[in-house]
Image 1: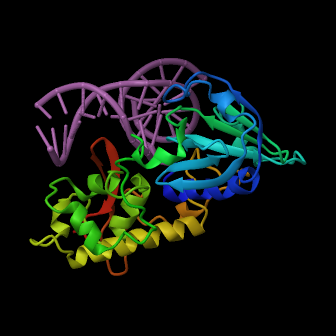
Image 2: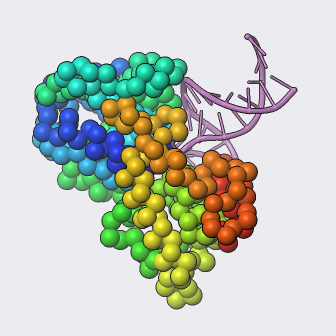
Length: 294
DNA sequence: AAGAACTCCTGTTGGC
DNA sequence: TGCCAACAGGAGTTCT
């Protein structure tokens, strides 16, 4: 599943085709994804022009000239493919060969005035699309409780400490909680904790001082979260199995993983003699080094 | 009331 | 080769 860097990469891939374009025709091939599509979904989109394409947390937001916003979430396996007016191949062959690849689970197709065709494919259907009034977007149930943007100005040690103060949940769980910091997922939480030298099992509240102020650990964690996300965005995200860019190319940040997916491999932190372990926290794999992450 | 478990769905992978 | 369990980038709902 796409986390913030992957969603941002998709946004940048869709923007040239979508921004300023009119939705000439929309194909909705089933009545639901994770949730039912909203009433009159196709009618509310057809003929509308996309005025801007943004992102909030892991949501893509296409502003329409009707005043509504097309809200899109990729879930675990959601993918967009942009086909150009020239009809050139949109993805490398290997990408299309996998079962469940393009074709089988194509659920929505947008035909745009610029000649582009954008297809949404989602094997597991954990993704969804809906329409929300722009004026009330922030108060909408989907966004009301969404936490701070980690690449915005709000993420610093003091804010992290305030968000985590008094929490006994493991750091891993706190960082995955989209109500606190929005956009991190399993991969980037593991990577950030490794870089910060912090145990995923540590209680989140230990990053705040008694008075709620930030510890040095909180400052470090805030810094490395920003660092790892910026590096991942620059690399076009991470490609494991389902994710690819809108032109079919692949992200390459997976080659920079220091912890995620490296069970039993030696820790790469200079001077550390530890080995990466995999444990399960609230049903999800956590990769970390028990030696240098405390 | 926070935190953990369970749930949705399909596909891939690894062990026997 | 088949079969089956475990696992996968998310997150809302339901338990304790």
